[in-house]
Every structure is written in structure tokens, then in C-alpha cells.
Image (cartoon, rainbow over all chains, first blue to last red; front, side):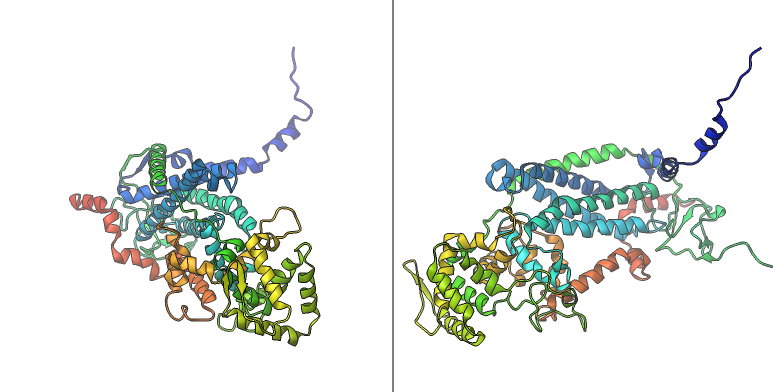
Length: 245
Length: 326
């Protein structure tokens, strides 16, 4: 006859193992918010059929070229491009990718404005996009200040008056090359990158905003006055989304 | 009898949507991003190869004083007598009375105060001259100047500023009329010599460490003169030429700053003593409006009322017309 015994700490150990962990909670929440089919979709609504939709991806692509060309400039140091043909070409890549980045981003922004892309719990997507746009302006501005040429010299001496008038110039000195270079190559790109990442994840989570009065929507859509104002959508009106989650 | 239902909000077409559960189509996200990246990379490489990028040499104190020595001298005396733009700038460089810009009753720069203190006479003229080696006559002139009364200093400075207005430069020498300007004449002429040799660039950049990266002093000094501004004006970079959004040459520059720069071209900002802070206040308000469009009734209705969306979703609306029962 054989007997089986449990390890002396098995019961206590199981209870402890069952307690939720930060990691587990984060994973459950992350997968719940962004399941793989939302994060990397291979289907999209039929109404997504316009060239305007490509400008988001073009903006991201230009941002990628900006980061890559900036990284090469950083590897060689700030003076390299003034004395080397290869350096001048990489600096030109950095300049023109920045110009295209802003062009694509502005077209994307106005496209989304005229689609009222904030509708249906998409306000945070709009706001993070605007913040990424504004911070990108600051990033490009510090880039112009970091060129060590006549443009950076003139722009810094002109721009100081505006910055100083707000009081910010006391701490953010556009005439201080070292400070501006560090903001340009580290702090601002980091913040812009974070906002762009949040923006893209929100787009994936919420999906592309439907057209006004989308007739392809479910027949259980709302009628006026049917929305529960607590942020949850009543079961009978599940296709109606409003407010922020 | 109480109801368990919570209050409901009316459906607002500019805030709410009916989420789509209609037909979907095949879509390859990674392919789209990859193709876009390659296309952008090729486009950027072509633009870089064809147009390159601007890199005009900066103005240094040396290049300025060699190209326009009289302008340098006329600027240097204003740094010494405290009448230059930097000397009278106000915060964050100094506390010149009445120099701060105001937004109504509030002056943000005055509230923050002086954080980058610059006494132009000391920082731009006297301290650099004291770095000259084996210059007993210069040291003596500075000593005479320093030990004189404020009224005597002002008298010398005024006398020199008067002759500097008609100064010339020929045969490598500064030509100024004689006058009762005491030691100031030697101080300024030596400062000019120092500038033309390049020594003043280094002296202005002096830092407690070996490595200096803060160009505040030389840039302010150079900007106080007229030489850099004349070069900028010739290259369409002045404030009334839409200023800093432009670049040297025919490059597009920071075109995204067009709205910010535009406010400087229109009244009252183009002639206001507080134009900078007024423009910043407008831009901050507009930026806030842009970020908060989804919350602002009326503003958020523009897309729906303008019907531009009909262009974006024209295929969708056309398909509805051919499927009247949907």
C-alpha cells in the first residue's frame, strides 16, 4: 500500500501563488485592451478607402528616417557634417526627413480634423496627436539651434525674445548650445516618441473612426437620448460609443 | 418608484459614433508601414542629393570686427555705457526698469526675474580686456576708468560715443576724432584689436571648465551690433520678412512656424513693446483650443457642417446610395 503526501508548505504555497502579481494584472489588462488582432490587424472596415489614411503611416516613416539620420549624426558628433561630404549628406537626410515629417503630419492632422476623428472615445487619440505635433515643433526648433551655423545663430538670437518674454528663457536658454543640443538629441525626441507610441496604440485600440451616420452600423445603434452617461454603453446599444473610457 | 437606470446622455454626432460592424476588407498593416518607409527613404535621399542643406558660416566676433570694425566699435561703446539692447534688456539678463514685457497687468519675465545676470560693461568689455597679457597700458586705463566717479565715467563714455558715430577705419587702424573720452578710447581700440585677432571670441566664451558650450555672451554681443542683422536682412531672415521660420538660401525652413511668425506681422503685435509675450499668449491659447477641439461645442461641429468628410468617405457614401436597404 502506498500513500501520497503533500509537501508541508503546499497549501500555504498555493495560496501565495494565487495572489495576483503586478505583471499578471498588467498582462491581462494589456491583452484585454489590445488583443493581437487589434494590435496587428489584417482586416479593416470597408470605409477606410482614401489616400488620406496613408499620411499617418507616412508620418511614422518620416519620423523613422529622422531618428536614423539623427543617430548617424550623433555617432560622428556635432561638427562632423560641417567638414565632410558624407556628413553633409546625412545632415541633408535629417533636414528633408524633418520637412516631410511635418508635411505628412499636418496633412494627417487636418485629415483627422475633418473626419472629426475624436468621436467615440477617441479624444485621447486626438490630444496625444496634438501633443506630439507641438512637441515635434520644439524638437525641430532645437535642431535648428544646434546647427552651429548662421541659421542657428540668427534663429537663436531672434527666438530668445519670445521665450524670454514668457519667463521660460531664464531656465531654457536658447543661446546655450550645450543645453539645446541635449534637449534636441535626447529629451524632446524621447517625449515625442512616447506620445507617438501612445497615439498609435490608442488608434489600434479604438480603431479608425467611422463615417458620420454610418449606415453600415448595427441596427442596435442608438437613438437620441439612449446613451448611459456613466461611460458604459448599455447592452442594447452596444454599438454606440461615446466619451472616454 | 425608483429606477436603476442612470441618467442618459443624448447622442451627439460630433462627439459620439455608432461603431462599425459592417463589411471589412483585407489589410496588411506591416506591409503598409514597410512600403511607406521605403518610399519616404527614397524620397528623402533624392531631396538630400538634389538640394543638400544650408550651412552658411556663423558670424564670429572676429569676422564681425574685421568686416565691420566701425559697427563693432559703435556697439562696444554702448556695451560699456549701458545703452546697448542687451544692457537694457531686462529679465533674465538684468533688471532694467521698465524693460519687461507685460500681458495686461502681468509680466511673466519679471516674476521669474534675473537668472542669467549680465553686466555688459564688465562681461563684454572690461573682463575680456583684463585677460590681455603684457598690456600695462590697458590695465592702467581700466584702473583709471574703474576708480573714476560714475559721472566721470558717463562723461567719457558720452564723449566717445559721439566720436564713434563718425569713426572710420583705414590702413588697419581705427580713425576717431580726439575728444575728452579719457581712458575709454584706449579701452575700445584695444577691444577692437582683440576682437580682430579672434581673442575676444575665446574671452567671451570663458567658462569655469575647459569645455565651453554656452554661447550666451558672444551671441548677445554680436546680436547687439548691426552687422549680423544686415546679413540676415539680405537673406530674407529679418523679423518683418517672416523672420526665423526662414532659412538661408531657398530652403523651406521651419514652415510650420507660419502662424507664430504671422502674428508678428500684424497690429498691434508688430509695433507693441510687449509683442513677444502677446504672440506667445495667442499661440498658447490656440494650441490649447486645438488640443481641446473634441470638447468645444461649435468648434467640434465644423467637420460635420463643412462636409469635407464626404470627400474622404465618398466611396462609402456612394455605396450607400447603391444599397438603399442597408
